Amino acid sequence: MGMPIRFALVVGCLALLVVAAPSRAQQDYPNRPVRFVIPDSPGGVNDRSARIVAPALSKALGQPVVVDNRPGAAGLIAWEYVAKNALADGYTIALCNSGILTLPLFIKDLRFDTLKDLRQVMIFSELGIPLIASMASPFNTFNQMVAYAKANPGKLNFGVPGFQSQSTLLIEAIKLKFGLDIVVVVFKGPADVPPAIYTNEVQLSLFSESTSTMGVKSGKLKVLASASGARMQSFPDVPTLAELGMTDVGAGTLVSIAVARATAQPVFERIVKATQVMMDSADVRDLLNKTQIYPVVTLTEEADRKVAAMSQFYANLAMAIGIKPQ
Image (cartoon, rainbow, N blue to C red):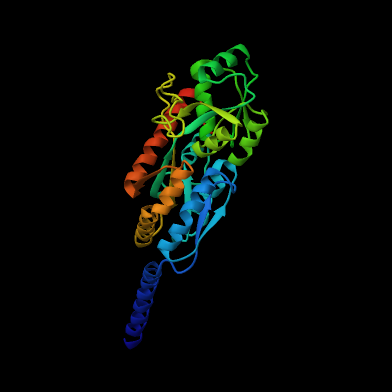
């Protein structure tokens, strides 16, 4: 009987080691660099956001936070990597925006669930989305644009940073509401659209507030309206789409940090605490404000709820304009 008892003791000890190993790993988190995956090329608003907060997050975690740009497919490449391909150990985090909520409205067989497979750590900004026009366009207001588009069907081009994007939904909603024939031109990513606007290859698009501000200051574009809950701080005289009659289109975009849903709770809580320290930094908040990425802190479960509500908003919008996943 001695052998079975010794065998049982060995098995029991091994089991304890298996249980204890992840626990020690969680307690030691982080003990190596953290990868911060960005769904954007260098220079885009997501990239700028990440590079503002990354140094403060690194300081709060006590480890380097390395920005990893993975542009393409309207964010799909970056977000799928964090949700499904990387280990859910807290060493890979994602910068998300509201574009992640439009993917399942366009793509039928996503390999991940944008709500269930990612867990929100913090929403750190809520941005208005300006509807902008090239300087060469023959109109200066939204209503003038509508009149021109009706008189010249098919002559205006609208640039979107990937077909499966928030911009596509919003322009299709505008077209439906006002009965417009505007050609949608699909680009590879956000950084590819501004040059096309500046050269008048496309006449319309939706930009970030910071990119729009730089474009207006340099005399390269004009702002016609905004998709936002309230008028933008940078353009207080520019009406929202809701004010122009599109009362069902009030949302801007959310900018958040998320991790794989399977991330262990102690690790998740450590990341949450670090992001709170990050956003308590006056330097971070000042830099965000200076680039029109206005800080608005919403944490964990509340952030999940806000993201879910915006997801439903875009699902309703897609249904109204007849967009179905393919």
